[in-house]
Image (cartoon, rainbow, N blue to C red; front, side, top):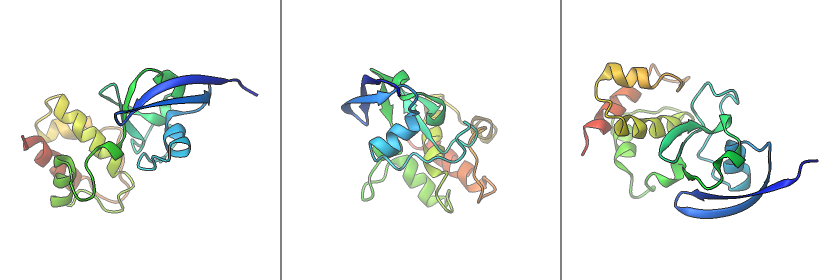
Length: 155
């Protein structure tokens, strides 16, 4: 049995103090301990991008990070991006361009779209390359790419 480790994490602009097992993955902390279910588990092998979150402003697959590694870091999940009655620009772009079908992969694509904007990605080719590591089993990616390009053009 492992000892619990105290950590403090800023999650979606709220400081959270927890005592966790050293082997707990960030994705499991978010989903099971904090009830933030928007971060999805698609593969558990850091392949699909459905568990994408921002750690200190950078997109990271949360199934590949131990929660203890996030001590004193800032984490943004999909829950921090807009609200149902007040969508963010990236959510509006996905909605207007039909950038989702079942929606399972959408949180990962939205977090990646925000990272695209931070990295001044602008062309379709750059977007497609940047999306490497985000999988969608429903679409041919056309509307996802179209949604991201639309978002990147917004001020």
